[in-house]
Amino acid sequence: MKSVKDSLLLRSSCRRYEREAVTPEQLQFIYDAIRNTPTSYNGQQFTVVDVNDQPTKERLEALIGQKQIKTCSHFMVFCMDYHKIMAGAKAKGVDMPPFYDTVDGVTVGMVDASLAMMSAVVAVEALGLGCCPIGYARTKDPQAIAEILHLPSHVMVICGLAIGVPREHNDLKPKQPASLMIHHNEYRQDDLTADMLAYDAEVQHYNKTRAGSQTDNDWVSHIVDYYRAAMDYEMLQALRDRGFDCKK
Ligand SMILES: Cc1cc2nc3c(=O)[nH]c(=O)nc-3n(C[C@H](O)[C@H](O)[C@H](O)COP(=O)(O)O)c2cc1C
Image 1 (tube, protein in one colour):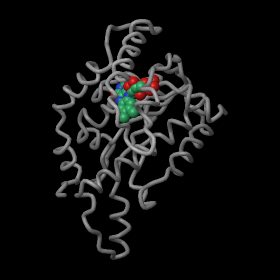
Image 2 (cartoon, helix red, strand yellow):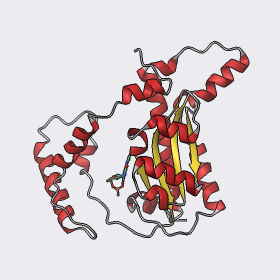
Image 3 (cartoon, protein in one colour):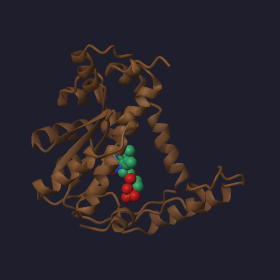
Image 4 (cartoon, helix red, strand yellow):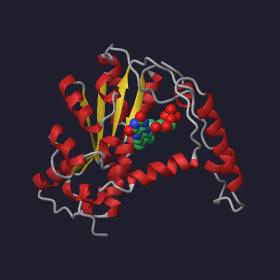
């Protein structure tokens, strides 16, 4: 097992996998890590659908469009989930308010599912396996994914995670310096633009010189381009389709 330090500081996303399967022991450790995730109220407002059936992975890949879904050993779909507590409340005759119809309720589910995915990421890294989150699992067509996975109402995919035996080890991507990411006692009060531009230049240099495919991308324009594309996602409707009708 890798050290915590190496698992966290040497991690990079892996998108190419060997044909080898993740072993049952490795999988058990990933499941245990997921299950011990801290959650809001200890309500555990998430569920993971672990897909290792090849035809199902291929259907998901055809829909979502990321090759690693097909080639990974396991594609785990992290969902926010109010279905389980609703079933428990109904069985016990407990009147349940429509918390899932509030922005905070949705936020709670998204945070819980995201933290669960991060538990899995750290476990995967510690095991020497590789993984890559797949956000397009949420944005491409959440209703179609719900149909493939037979998700009940009040369950919605938040993110996918492809997991497998790594066939590549990507260079670590430069991240924002601590001066931008970690502020002390209050949000930093000076002008942060110079630090941002220095970081932007560092990423541009990395993109030009990294192993594998090189690009001329800077950081700011590249990220803003993603936001521009994301403006087309109809996530409010997707939430409503899944039973989350945000009122407040
Ligand atoms: C929520 C989330 C969604 C992501 N979605 C995708 C995706 O759909 N496809 C992909 O190739 N990488 C995806 N990634 C991986 C990011 O591109 C990657 O984490 C980022 O470029 C930083 O690189 P690193 O993970 O190697 O440090 C996603 C990461 C996160 C956290």
